[in-house]
Image 1 (cartoon, rainbow over the protein chains, first blue to last red):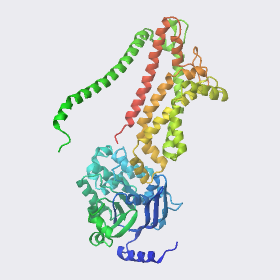
Image 2: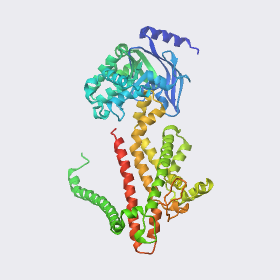
Image 3: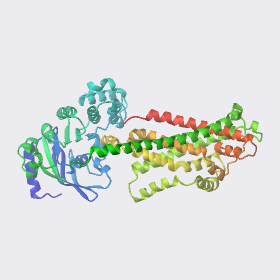
Image 4: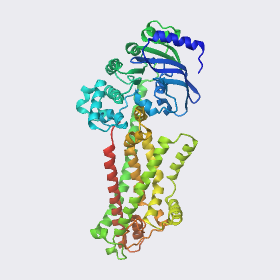
Length: 271
Length: 292
């Protein structure tokens, strides 16, 4: 692939501004179409290890589409076409030989609406390890406890592991879903507006959890809530009409954005 | 200025309340009429048939003397028939539904197939009888056997099972699929562990309705030449047999008054078998029924 000079310059600029932690996801000239609808346009993003990267933007800007492209969940929608590349740890996820199942065991996902399976809390968390072939009850017990602790919900549910996951509150369900994602021991956790269906206290708990989790995982979080992005993320990307308008350190985005549109959005003038 | 004036609202309130209770009455009446018709039916059959119900009725073969006529051959034949119909139609029906909902691409061809499966559910059963006669009895030389009749009945109820299973599979929330795929599960793992358990109550409801229809159908059996009076029990799926509705049809069309009571007793047995099948389905459904 040839790169024009402006791309190189912007790359070096990014290098300087984003610091020199390791890259997890490097997106190069990603385009995505739903049928004839051009949903993502020439996306370039470099997402770093052990950081929280927030993706903000108004409804329909492509932020959810982008995060679903990172684990190729977007392909469940018929008539999706993509071009360009996304390098996960240096390997293009669109490569023919790259199995989606393989990718998704490295990249966990938490969805907008808490979506536990209609099974017990234990079976929910053990689902991932089981499908990947772990049958030993003792190992499963350990994974379940470790994951529930990791999602800061162990103390609340340890005595009711055999109850249906729907018997707990929405906020607790969402943390069970996070535990379920942790149970496959992922490298990256994608979160698609994980708190939009939750009350403020549950939201706060998830935000604190995200801070805790970034020590061990790289987290990419789509959010509608700009205060949330400002509170919990290290980097922020602002999407608008399928393009990345600005991508920088969160402090810079919120205190000194370089693009007028970013400023308008974060100061609430539209969106 | 206000558009809604309280006085006018109050004035019209009486009429609105009247209409409200009127419709409640209409719907209540619908239920009462339906239940009444069912009760009369049950009463007539019960009062006619109970005198003839006995262990002998269950263990005797058919006879030209009403007092000795029994339902043994038909009862056993119907059970044999179900033993073929239930697995055949469930495996083919649920399998087709899974393919159509989870694997097939959504395009004009699959749309066409979907619509026509629903249409097939409305085809008269006698047409399926003719189909069974041509394919299973003659072309595949199965003769008038349990197997041929079982396959014919399976074809008859397949559309109902497919449509019901499709509905059940479609009503499994997409978020559950997402959650499973998002963890790296394959399609088959997702179907087996998430979709089917959630869809089973719906699938069973459709399946039991369909099987109830199969056990009560007479027309296809007449067309493929199932005999009425049989004095032995089938010993395998290639044997000929008779079924409950055939036997009941025969008894009820006989001139002697006594046979009407025998027919009523036969209907009671048929309903007992149906009730038994339904309760098994309800048990399985409750086992899988979970909130989500």
